[in-house]
Picture 1 (tube, rainbow, N blue to C red):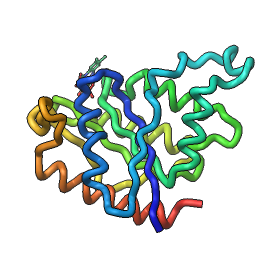
Picture 2: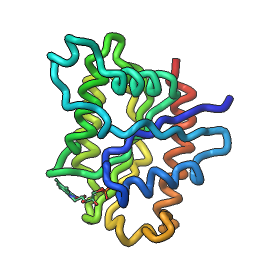
Picture 3: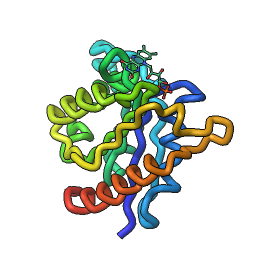
Picture 4: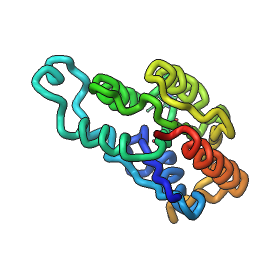
Length: 185
Ligand code: FNR
């Protein structure tokens, strides 16, 4: 039947290249897949166990509920200093502290984009590492690693223009839908 993928975006800026990729997903997903953006990771406070002791912030539990409700999560992110941007890592850290943490058993697909030819691949592998600890079900292939992203979008029309990249994302989403149907629940 129809399934839903939640999208977690690692960049906060309005003109984010990763944001352009994220907004292209509904047009690239199979017809029976709904793409559901999660709230901005920027809405969460910096993780602090003292805040947690007073009760998880509503933004954290709402994001966790949205992850639980989804059949899979697509994480789309730039790479900062060869790793995961702090805001995204912070959101993962918050969600990981919840009882019955929502990434356990959850299908996860990763997409990274960078102006560098390496496309944020080092962030991609650090995300995979954290998701192994959280016992997520990480889709291995196809990998979506978008190098030179500034040449593959039209910022003025907010469009992912590069046909090769669109094809790789389409293939990943098709594969991820089949994977989520096998692994969810
Ligand atoms: C970067 N950038 C970057 N790019 C990269 O390929 N490898 C890296 O390690 C880094 N490191 C890095 C650190 C910090 C603090 C910033 C702000 C940026 C460049 C980054 O990929 C570029 O700014 C992207 O355009 C950010 O993604 P969005 O916001 O366009 O989605």
